[in-house]
Length: 145
Ligand code: RB5
Image (cartoon, rainbow, N blue to C red; front, top):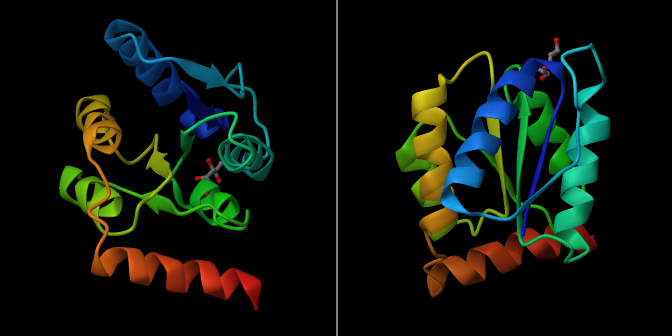
């Protein structure tokens, strides 16, 4: 199950991604926002992030105008490794090396064609483990201090 959420700046791209997920048959839960009326991005980023750490969803996608605000907010939730990606190579590496569990996108930065490609890579790339697992564990250690 995939969590997806956006503010107004990411609403149009969220709708495109949802159409794409439905075409692919990927199950998702939409944590809002549900219109393009102005809202506060941390509220929606936190909802998706909490759904991931609670186990209700396996991974998440958060979207705002730049992707920056939602990524900062999601990364405040313990256990979240949110990667803001503007290209598919970064999305691939965020899964292989960082075991990213949330993808952040900028609805005013990344066009829909590229964004859907990034989503596909995020969904279909596995974590490499090995030395990268040690580094991800070191990130988790930071959360305990
Ligand atoms: C909203 O105008 C905008 O600030 C928001 O979507 C996001 O880009 C914040 O980082």
